[in-house]
Length: 445
Image (cartoon, rainbow, N blue to C red; front, side, top):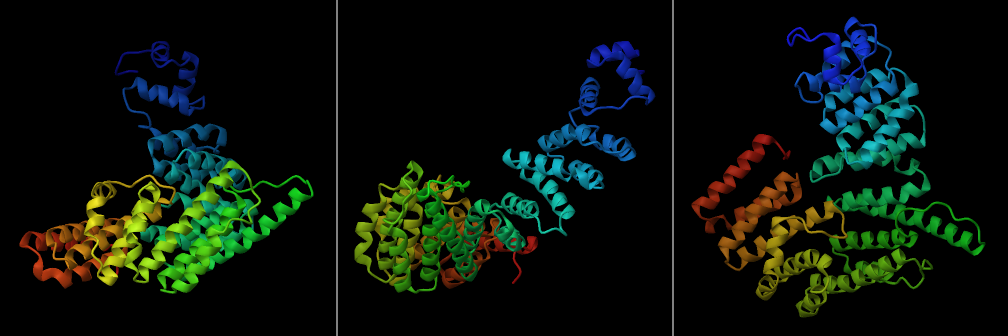
């Protein structure tokens, strides 16, 4: 005010604040709200949030925190991604455990709005306040934290899954099935077969109970309880699909076929909704496709033509199908040059960006890395070195960026096997990438 030669009335008019309020704020006799602070900040020509740290340190820490007063501050900080300020405010509020309910509600808002980093801070604070209680809300906080941490970093995903495991069965019955599906998908993307097998079995057991209960209530014409986001039969069928993935990975193709037949048979399903019909059709299609896959992985190259014809009209299946075809070609030395030519455009698009799919993002990332590796292996085996090393470098770079240690190690082994055929430029690019990874210490081996 002095710098601009403004009195209280003039400043109030410029800032859009009642002059009496300005007077009270200046003299320290009136509480300063976040909305008023934002107006004053804008009047002074600073960006929104410029004084938030001062506000927290000089005002909130010296008063008894009031959730009604700081709620707008938390929302503004989340919008501005000022996570350190959120941590400071939450630390002050959690000195009173009575604010746990309000913080949980705000955290739920942040989560629904996709402000995951901000929501994690609040969920963790609420969880600390309830750590000595065997509460459902504690489990729900841990579930939200687990989901908010999911991304392309495989190491971070694994840490989040391990942290969430002890809480999954504390959730209510409706949330449990979806939480088990999400947990299983993480272990599927990380190729943690034993854990995947374990949690797929738990999901199957829980889903069977809920399905029988729901069917019994419908027969008795009783009010059915709240259900998860997908039809109940989905979780039973999906658990069998996951078991099939485990058996396939372990080379037990006979048991794989048994599981495929099980989830492909949906004749027992009593659900008749449009959503149920959608998933029934998908499981039948997946079963048909995976019969081709098992024959392929068993060495029967004669099914490639039928398999390709099948997937041409099913965009969601193309990426995984190509992975399967190239893996079988590498394992049994089958010539699939015509497949590369036929899907040249799709392969280029997959490498450029993630395709939209019914599959979970973690599994799509995993399949993209797998496709690059199998393509590199195939091209190098067939002396198409320029293409092979390009795919190999791309796979190595993507594996490093996503912390996918399994394929990173496989890529380095493949490069050493064919190093003699590489150019000086390829060797330089390879060693620069390896040096960068070691410098960042992304992996520990």
